[in-house]
Image 1: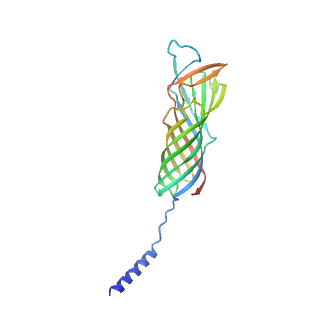
Image 2 (image 1 turned 60 degrees about the vertical axis):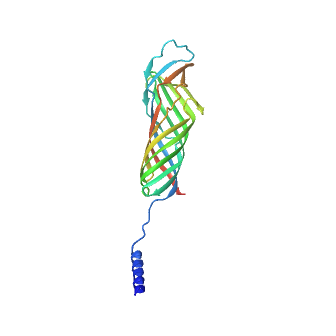
Image 3 (image 1 turned 60 degrees about the horizontal axis):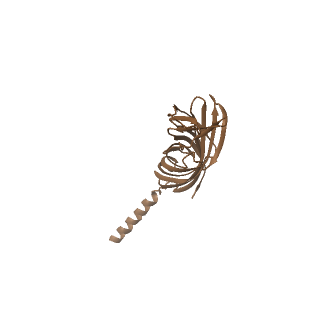
Length: 240
């Protein structure tokens, strides 16, 4: 009696299982992504003091409050990302990227300085959202190495006249290793917005100079906080 009941139970279970479709997740567990972006950045120098190089100072140099100017850049922003998704709602990514980042500041009524670096960075981010639809928020940190520095100095009001331009490899005018934190919001179809804040000063305050008419001037910023807002796109994607 027990054997027919067991056989009937197994047949019913098999029939029910056949009628319920197997649920499949639509997210990729891992993939590679090539990304690029445009960046709007700015930096706050606070107060700055300017004085000719080589002059012995017998009194404190007057300080002036600098005025930050937003800086837009679209060149040499490229990265490769490795995405690992644990479940549809949680994932992470790392990789590497190259970035053109910097700041523009008017030091006083007559001097404007543009400063930028090319950097190589390694990010690490936690993703929360819908991995299948590529709609998520990512929160992470990155360490960048600033390997090329460029500076332009302008004299006069408005746009001013360019009086100096130079670049240096592995310059001591900036801190070479820069940690930052960021929040990124991906809207699907490969588009994202990212806000980034650098945790240490962008500039080395004891090594800032510019030249006007052959005369070298030192200038010391009170601080050099750098932050940016970027809009990016995924250029290509492939499974690992």
